[in-house]
Structure formats: C-alpha cells, structure tokens
Image (tube, rainbow, N blue to C red; front, side, top):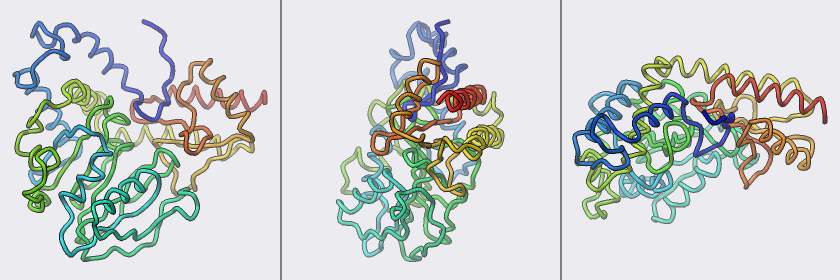
Length: 360
C-alpha cells in the first residue's frame, strides 16, 4: 500500500482506513451488481439499501424516535443557512442566534438577508471568538434558537448545549456530528456538512423533527423545502449517491467497530487531552481557545512567530503530518482530530511538537 500520512485536515478530512479499504474492494463490482457504486442508478435496489441503511444507522447511533426525519440535501451546511429561516421562521416571531464564529456569522447574515427578525442573544466576538458564551436570555417567543456546536476556525466547542425550554434548538453540527452522544429531543433541526466528520464533501445530513415540517411555507421553490426531501426519501432529484454510500460506511464503522458514540467520545477526549496537556505545559506553544471552551475536534495554537509557524507546518508535512496550517482567516496552526484521526496520529503529532520545540 502507498504510504499514508497522518491527516489533520479540517475538511475534507480524514476517513477511517477500514472505510477506504472497503470502498477500494467494492469499487469495480458493488454488491454483485457488476457496476461500480459510481455507476449504479439511485433508483436501483442497490442504492435503496445504501440510503436506507445510512438512515437506519443514524437513527440507532443517535437514538432518534419516530418523530424525526433523516434526509440528505446537497449544498452543504452553507445552503442550510438560508433554508432554515426560509422554512422554519414564523411570521411575527423573532429568530434567536448565538454567534461564536465564522459559520454562525454566515448563518446570521443569511437570516438577515431574508428580512427575518434576527436577535443575536449572545456573541463571543468581543474576544475574537475564543470562548463559548455562558450567560444569555432566550426569547421564549422565538421561533428557534440557532447555534454552532463546534467552531473549526477558532477551536471552540459547546461542552453543554443551551437549555431552550420550549424553544426548538437548531444546530450546525458539521464539525462534531457523531463525535459524542446527546439528547436529540430539544432539537427542531440538526444539520451537518458531511466532509468534516462523517464522509466526503458533497451533501449535508439533516435531522428534522416532524412538528417543524408543519411550518414549511407552500410557496417555496421545491428544492428549498424540507418537505420535498422528507416526502421523497431524499430522492426528489438525484442525490449525492457516492457521498451517501461513504457516509453509510462511516456510520457502519462507528456502530460496529467503534461500538457507538459513547466509546467514540472517550477516544476523542483522550486525543484532545494528549494535545492540550502538551500545550498547557509548554511556553513555546500557545492554545488560542479558553480552556473551558476548547474543542475536541479542532485544536488551534500559535508558535512564538509566524516564521516558526511556517517552518513547523513545512517540517511536519515532511515528517508525514499533514493539514496543520490554520485557517487562512486567522493563521497559526490547527490540528483537526475528528473521529477518523486515530490516537496514534495524535501521539505522533505530540512527539513531533516536542522535538520541534527542542530544536527551535
């Protein structure tokens, strides 16, 4: 096998090696069809089994009741920024948002573009989004409360989700979806771009509580209505078949190999602790997120100078540690340690960081 590096890219990101190997084995002849999964019809029995299995595994892993629908929508999480207010806002009611970084900012902008009554009830912009807000008042008359569970650019994550009482939560979980168990019941809508933690780029997985579908306006274009996707099992038009196939394999790995989300969370906590312990003991590396807001998915840090950061990233790549450059909007370094990035990769990174500091 061609030598593989340790992949710390933020998205598209690492996929589990067993998933890649299964894809390789099935590429030319999928399930005895005589065709590749890249070639089979989305109306075939073979793809029916794929999409239905992906939905069933999502339901089991998250313990979803019959009051939730699971759909796949092209356009990634960014399309959801406008679909949410278009479908779920209610005339005469505000929509609440919490701003914790770039993706929350983009979601707020789209809701305002659509002339919705947007209330930003909390923001961490005052300190360049290095923390998760703790104190805020949710408008009990709001149509929904939107927040982003994990912030890839600034390296922050909600340790505990907001308590909305009777207001439906709407959450962008793109970068920590399926990384830990949680109670889905307070959520009216959960959405996640696939390319960070559950598959390759090309679709968003959305989980919609059925009562929220009653809000969908009849006069929206078909491809912008959630009901279009729930009523047609995500196949009103041709879905992103190969992406959904890979998502199904990743969910299979999570369920059958890892043993579920509780086990996945334990591993993710161990990976995060391994890196953060190094950052906390070092005067050379500096974490950028407040300790009580640190992400277990994206570890962001700086070195004493930009020159050292450039050398760190280049030397790491040479050493087989890829994807450590921070987001272009903030610079610095970032190690994305999603589900598929193993503890072995994290330990290799920490060892490299120690050696780089020693030589610097």
